[in-house]
Amino acid sequence: MVLTSKKRLGDILVESGLLTPEDILKTLETKQADQKLGDALIQNGLITETQLIEALEAQLGVPHVNLYKFPIDRSLVTVLSEEEAKQKEIIPIKKESNRLTVAMADPLDLFTIEELRMMTGFEIEPVIATKEEIRRTISKVYESDSTLNELMSQVAKDNKDTGETVDNDSPIAKLANRILFNAIDQRASDIHIDPHENRVTVRYRIDGDLKTDRELPKDMQNMLTARIKIMSNLNITENRLPQDGRVKLTVEGHPIDLRVSTIPTVHGEKIVLRVLDLQNTVHDPQKIGLTPENLKTFIRFIEKPNGIVLITGPTGSGKTSTLYSALNHLNKEEVNIITIEDPVEIHLDGINQIQVNPKIGLTFASGLRSILRQDPNIIMIGEIRDTETADIAIRASLTGHLVLSTIHTNDSVSTITRLLDMKVEPFLIATSLTGVIAQRLIRTVCRDCSEYEAATDREKEIFAARGLTLDKVKRGKGCRSCNMTGYRGRIAIHEMLSVDSEIRRLIMDHEHANRIRDYLTQKKMKYLIDDGFLKVLNGMTTTEEVIRVVTGAETL
Image 1 (spheres, helix red, strand yellow):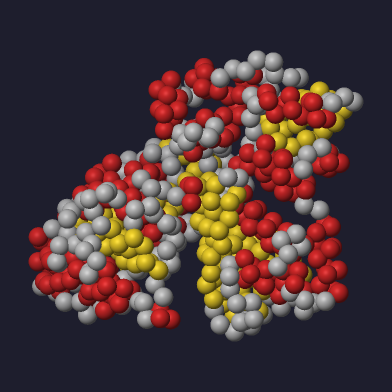
Image 2: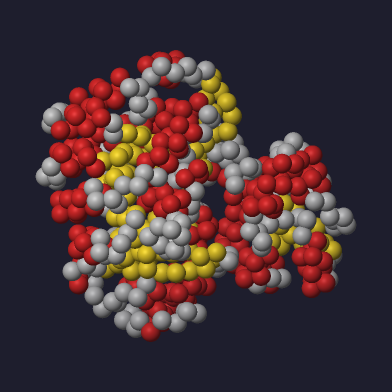
């Protein structure tokens, strides 16, 4: 079957009832010039890729294929190179007489279909598959055992020769690239390369959980470590001390930054790579999961001309993304914004960013002193770690500057206790602190396999204790999109502590944190668990997930 007429995607989605004409027009106005409409709609969260495919299947009569279960003819890899397959987002999967079946992310791409017909001489039978399925299948089909066999023979020939690690076409370079690209395809936030006594394990952190991707022979460890060190400009001869580096990549046309950290263990160097997808970085406070009420409070915090605003939470809770969204909101020609970070994760146009370098004496505290001589309006400090930095930051906020920073505590109220523990004077905290935002990341229900079901009695009791009524809960059944977990993606939950005159009085009087909590409860402040439960009511996540993240309990 060859499509002979091109029906517009927007019309198909409107006819299927998934979107309104207004949704299509708004997306067309805001999408990037070279971005396809379907990609923009998915990126904006208006539809999922599976919903897009189902609409195309129903309207165009083009069948949908599950590539995970399809018996793909691997001999067809000669039809297209791996680079062409990735660029066009297609993969040939079956050949019958003069007909070639091709899985495509965009079956409306008549130009590619005609190009394939001219190039191969076959009649092209398009079928639809998700981009993620196509990317993973391309990696699996084009990745043969020859790469590993070639590498093993090289290791056997000369285990100590690291010349191969410099060659971009060497087997070890291809293996390293495969590990990186697979992680990006699977939306991993971190890559762990763990050395063991007899093997090396590669694990990806996806939606907060680590999953093993593959195990490699121990003989590959030194070459793989050397290759990643060369990519990130680290010292390959130093294996006794921790090192930090950075790799910049371009994958499918958009930039990816990798923060690389190595640390020596008893079985060799462990490597962790933090994946920063610069295209998907949140630059808008309205897109970080804030409820309308919390968004209003957040904007009020950061639009004050002076004072200090702190964002708190454990490592990996999205604090830096929230800070960057605030800076992007405040970034205007008439203000001078300077940041000091360790490391500078994302480069922001129009903002002066400083990288901490303790080796030459450039610490948060020393850098902050110099920043105050640069006529700043807004200062962002990556993290308040010690008394000296806290003291300078607070005094800067008292002299007409807006200071934004992060701090590690369990909740918003504990931040006040932490500052007191740092020996910051209570009167300084009381007069400078504008607000504290506590934050966590929770997994969201997979939109492709989610269904509403009746809430359990235990869930109803838990919600009733917080003054909420719960009748039904949306849960994912598990599908190929979410790797059978029922969850896909994460969203933030927040807790907003606004420092008013009563809290200032309690701080000045050295009152215990529990006294402050009692006052906030009387004011009906929404804690992390309350914000999480609101997202359960909105069908974004589950009760179990909120309780797991906020309290650490695995069961209700």
